[in-house]
Structures are given as C-alpha cells and as structure tokens.
Image (cartoon, rainbow, N blue to C red):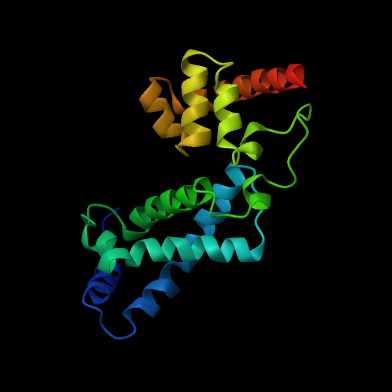
Length: 189
C-alpha cells in the first residue's frame, strides 16, 4: 500500500515541526502503538499493567522523535506510514522488553516459576543467563530458533528466512525446543 496523501502531509508537518503536527501524529497513530504493544506482549506471554502499556507506548514515540525525527526523515515512502511505524514500534517494544528496563514482574510474566514448573520458556526471558544455559541443551536449528526468538526478539518470518525454513515451521520447532528445555530444567531440580 502506498503512502496516503494524509500521511504524506502529516509526515512533512512533523519533520518541519509545524504547530500541532506532533499532536496530530500521536492522535493518528496511538491506536497502532497500543495494538503493537499488546500483540508483542501477547506473543511473548507477558502480562501488562496499564502503566507498563503506557511506558511501552511512550518508548515507541520516543524512538520516533529521537535525533530530531530521524526515523521519519529516513522513511523511504515506499509503503504506508502505518506499516513502517508498526515495524518501528515492534522493534522498539522488543528492545525495551529485552533491555530489562521493564519491571521484573512484567518481563517474567509474573512470579518466577519453579524449576520443575512447566511454564513456557518465554516467561523466563528476563533471565538471559538462564536462557543461554538452557540453550546448551539444544543443537542446530532448535538452538538457533530459540536464541533468535527469545534473546533477539525476531519474528517467525525473520527466523524462517534466516534458518531456511518456512515461517509456519517455526512455531512447532519452538514448541519442541521448549519441551526439551522444560525436561532439562526438571532434571536439574
């Protein structure tokens, strides 16, 4: 989808710092930011409070205004502005979650599960050392996929093209790897 005239005008107004341009931009794209925050948290099994959601949305908009709207200035205008901003927002949210700036309760998806608990691995993403240790139990594509998903925050599509499998194969591979990690964690306790 091409850049719409409305978005082209809004983009130019923001870059030129016209009056009310930023407020109009935020009004237009706040719903998109909230959607990306909620979706990113959901696929990582994270529970968000309203404060967490607001902080993550703020991180998205701070990313956009950083360095005098550098992201908007570098937008190539070959797709819709919403598509571009969705990618920017997802990356900002994942980076924020992985940088441990979010509270431990959020990043862990709740209280830390016991070692024998069958909680999904992504609920323990806040402990990067533990994920790295558990990765030693995996080999080949499984280790690559778990590392890219849990530590690098890549999407199924990105993982599939990197590893050379279809995006639809990534989920089942992650499930099998999680099961191995659960069993390894249970045997250690």
